[in-house]
Each structure stands twice: as structure tokens, then as C-alpha cells.
Length: 307
Image (cartoon, rainbow, N blue to C red; front, top):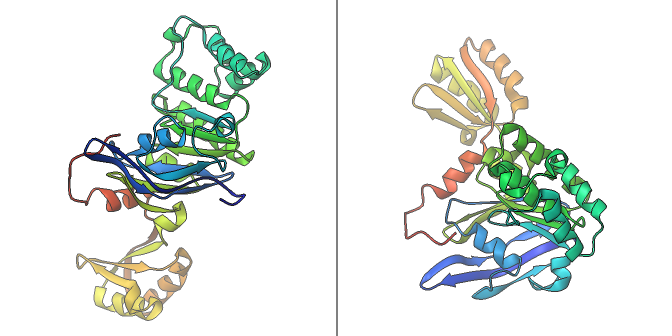
């Protein structure tokens, strides 16, 4: 485990009875990045995170967090987490709940005020936890994870229950945390959100890690879509410009070119020069959502793994 790696697993596996919730997962999270852990419900995301935190013992395989086994006191001290929803004393205020945690860890009360401000709960800090909305409870859980400025944040669906403004604020917070040198490992089902803030992602389905890569690499290059008449003449021009393997005819009505958006002006000039009438010409990029469904939803249905 080198100095840039903060989490790594090799063959990490968890079996409940006869079902494999997590099946030989190898993943790597590097220092200072936002890593998105994606998968359908029941794919094994939460079980994996719980093993990394030392809350669940793996059946086989291994993991290192901060270079130490999960649950090691030195690793726990440098990790903040929110997994499967926050749990607090309902009769205490948000501030009082955080003070309990801070004092347990030997942190001063000013640290409580700092994290309440970071999650925009200062004004409601004196209110009892049981009066909080789902979104407020989630933000308080993230505040607890931020106590002591841990090197690693492990967050399971951190935007659950937040309204659009709250989601935007949470995205901003996570980006700021990573920019400050901390590492964020988060699971989420909001793919547009992950696409916006994550540096790398791992996609898990039925317990197996299907792919681990940067968001840009997963989405692939830009595609140019062209509608033109006559199509055969447009095809000849596009093929001459981009090559035979880079041009595809779709539904007999449009062309798709595997080419960067920077080629659009050259293509437009060549088409007009050849007397082609252009009805549509624009660049598109695959979304992370499209990649996700390509990798997961076409796989054969089997008995669902545990979450």
C-alpha cells in the first residue's frame, strides 16, 4: 500500500448463508479524491463499506484502511463515517448529541460549532433531534463524521432526504473537503450527482465489482451526431474525414461519428462544400447514467444479494 493509497481491498468477500453479498472485490481509493461507489439496490455497497469500517468481518479476502486492517484503532481515529443513516439520542439537541461524541473523542466544544456551521445547522443546533426532518438528520450525521477533521470520510447515501438546495450544498461541501486534502468514499444512487463531483467510480452489481475507473474514461469520448440529405453523400464525406470505423448509420436517418467536438467545424465545411443539406449537427457525451445501465441492467437476473 503506497503513500497515495488510503483504502485498498483484495478479493474482499462476504457470504451470508449461501448468498454472496460481496464477491472478491478489489478496489483502490487514493488520497484526496472523491470516490463514488455505485450499484443497484442490493448490489453489496453498504456491506462493503461496513467491512471497511470494521463493522462486519469479511468471509475471505483482505482490506487496508490507512495501511491498517479495518477496525484498527489507529484507522478508526482517522476515519469519519455515516452508514445506513444517522443514529442519535432523540431527546437531546443536535448540538448536545455532537458534544457527546466530541467529548468521547477528547475534542473541544468549538469543534461541535465548527461542524454544525459546515453543514448549515447552527440555527437549529439547539432543537431536539427527534424534531429534525430526514434531511436535517442526514446533515447532522455528516457533521458527526466531520468531527476531528478525519483523513477519510466514508458516507453511505449522504444526500438522502435532502431537497435540491440541500443536495447542492452537500456537493459543495464534499468538493471542499477533498480540495482540503481529505478523501471521500461515498455510495450514491444519484448518478448525475456522482458524475458532477467524483474523480473516480467503482460500479458493483450482485456483489462483484464490474469496473473501476475515472468518470471521464467511463463516459468515453465525444460523439458527433449528424442529420443530413442526401445521407449517402454525407456518409462519404464523414467517412473521408473520420475514417470507416468511426462512422455509423443509425436507423437509416442519421450518422454518428466517434470524433471530438473540435472536428465539427471541419465537418460542416466539408458537407456544405459537397452540396449536402445539414439538418442536425452537434456533439453529445454519454452520461454516467448511460454507462451504469449498460453495465448493470442488461445482466441476467439472479437471486438478489444482500445490501
